[in-house]
Image 1 (cartoon, rainbow, N blue to C red):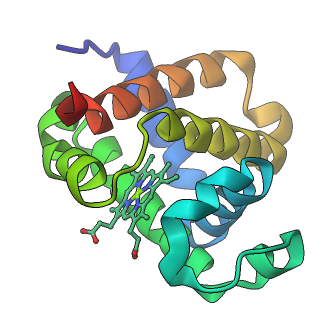
Image 2 (cartoon, rainbow, N blue to C red):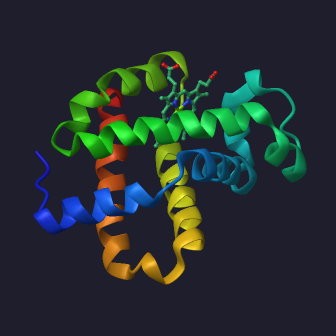
Length: 147
Ligand code: HEG
């Protein structure tokens, strides 16, 4: 059971409140596909993903980036129940999508970089520390059906 202090809760909710899912979601997912090109194998249904320009212009990538961030919104709003909230998503990624769970961390890292780029000094090391904890809990929850 994860424990959150009031300061951690308000740091996560505060940061999340400034995030535009429609902007950050597509940036984070396209970054994963560009920096870690082997992750493109999971998105065969998204069409052409063979170059940086094509990934950035792919509408399905943008849409799915929003889907992923909207799923994170569920976690932000239910910080005490992230594991159960993600139990179905974890099964889906394991049994139907066959996503190696190591990729969850890659997405978290890209998302953190996109957020840092967007918010600059406002994304202080203190805020990052709490954000990192949040993403670690999300990653563990998404991996919970793998083990
Ligand atoms: Mg996953 C579908 C969330 C990481 C590959 N992902 C989905 C869906 C959600 C989701 C909500 C839609 C589920 C549905 O249709 O019911 N994904 C999600 C989160 C995170 C994540 C919250 C990490 C924070 N996903 C992730 C990673 C990969 C991946 C790292 C692969 C590298 N997801 C993936 C694929 C699909 C989804 C291939 C199906 C996409 C489609 O065909 O529309």
